[in-house]
Amino acid sequence: MNRTEFIIAIAIILFVAFALGWFAHWVIHRFTRVSKSDIGEFERMSQELHEAEEARDQAISYLQQRESELSSQINQSEAELRAAMDGLREARLEAEEMRAYIEKISAGN
Image (tube, rainbow, N blue to C red):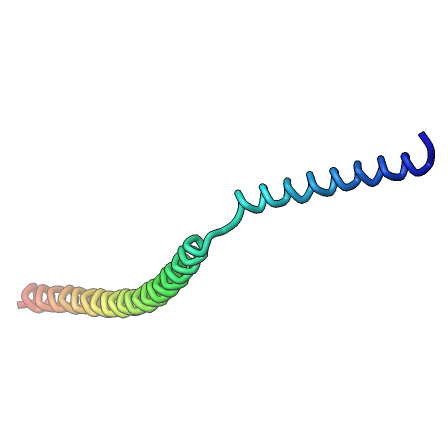
């Protein structure tokens, strides 16, 4: 095999390798290609996801607002309860003092 035959053989081998590579690329591209309907579905899903995230954020902010309202109502109710309990305690002490006073006056007569 002389030099010219060797160069031609290498050129043919390289051409066949190129053709096989190009064909493999075409086949892979053909099977993995994303269709326009898939792209449309991806866009629709993306939009729905965005809307769901917005709804979630609104729900979270509503729940936080509602939680703070309820917390303030609980604090207010607890303060009113403490005030009522203090008033009841004072009234009981007063009633006890009045009973003791009445018993003291009754015992003196």
